[in-house]
Image (cartoon, one colour):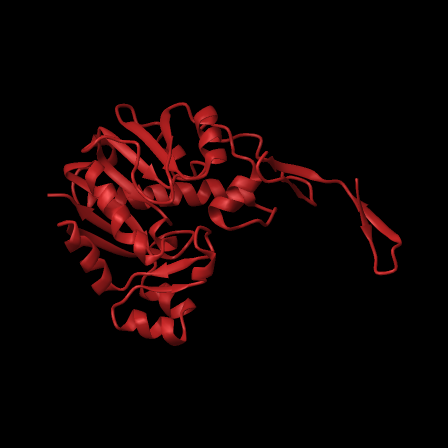
Length: 273
């Protein structure tokens, strides 16, 4: 029990703590509310991650509907990826290998579990989530990555690499290095799919200098001081997207505005020559 002490030092109430994670190098983190109860039945039969992992992945910590939102948003974003691929080449079921870059706790990746002949991989920089994925999503392989490249994969390893809500949180010095690294591990003719904050999100969230930068075709950002977290948010105008693609000689196959369901992000589909 954790006592709550008022301004005069008297005990007002006690709250039962719920341990979230123990990291020997940091501390024990506790949440002062009960953990939400997961649904009794999950259609794919796979385990559900702890609520704190869902919160870190989605930026949503509200208890009501947390698991339902996690499952629904992942399914809708997986469907958006399927639809984008159909418009630009072979569909998901015809791919030999897929990498979810920035997979978190498998919000999207778990929806590839039924693919019969596709090797599925995920990579993320959070070791706790990668450990959970390795134990809970056995149909896929997982690796830990750093904040900057490289990844632990050989050249030309994948038919598709996608990154949902990843480049939207990378500061400019990491944008091109990471796209170059994703290009390295994609096979010739393979595709790189990115979700990006476009005009709709810029209109809603930017003002002042940020809006001016976006309007002039430059990468804009907010909360840069919180780099490395979901709070740090960047916005990709069309000229900047073209510059990124051209730097790695990638072809822009398609752009789908507002295609990522839980974030209002655009999908940019690129092809490696």
